[in-house]
Length: 277
Ligand SMILES: NC(=O)c1ccc[n+]([C@@H]2O[C@H](COP(=O)([O-])OP(=O)(O)OC[C@H]3O[C@@H](n4cnc5c(N)ncnc54)[C@H](OP(=O)(O)O)[C@@H]3O)[C@@H](O)[C@H]2O)c1
Image (cartoon, rainbow, N blue to C red):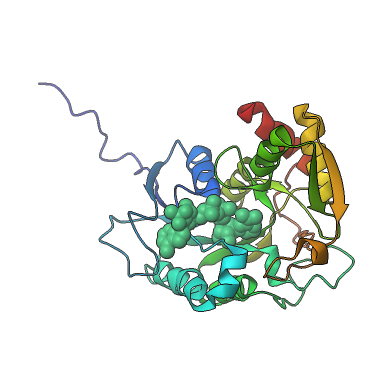
């Protein structure tokens, strides 16, 4: 008689849930964990502001679903909080080990050296406050991964916007008085996997690309690497005039001895463009 091809004594494959699965980080995490049993739920599958639908037993949740419209959050802070704080509380209520993603915008940017995990947050914007609120409700069994200036070959991000504008115009005006670490989602997803696999202690972890730059410097690097002829006119945050205040300086580094290290942002840009162009 034919034997069943599953060994009942073999360890069960780990089952992961990715929330916000159609977002840029959600897509990258599915790729980084592709050899596992991944349940990928997009916004239409589970609006995290509502309690969870019926789910199979889970071993790990990678929670990326978030209100990420920083300026829109100023106009609707309660809407942003419902998703970012209420949504994270709904995810934490599942009582499954959790990676919850947070942001450099929890800091006010008044520091002149990289922010480490023990620095005090002081968000300037409604979005930043909602992400800090999400950290508070993620629970004791969560890794809270703060990252910054995410970009990818998919979704809405600065790299894709610059490539579009650079091909349409001779010049773009870009802010030159905000400094951060642009982080490629593929590198963040790999570092997240490293954190989980090594079963590092729960709590806050800063995982961002090495190196730092201003948005204008990043735009110039994008045009140079992509061979796009477009001049970057450096402007101030005040000239750009956005509703939400942003930290002038939000470079993240980890003070934890065993933190996964991410490549330099220029390496992230090269990896992204290699898949995009
Ligand atoms: N982007 C950055 O620069 C940055 C920097 C630091 C930290 N982070 C954090 O990193 C995480 C991932 O960000 P990302 O850049 O991948 O964002 P993203 O591309 O905007 O993806 C977020 C996803 O969440 C979904 N979503 C929004 N509201 C939802 C809801 N109520 N229920 C379920 N899903 C919902 C969105 O779906 P729809 O588009 O259909 O609404 C989208 O697919 C977030 O926690 C973000 O705060 C981002």
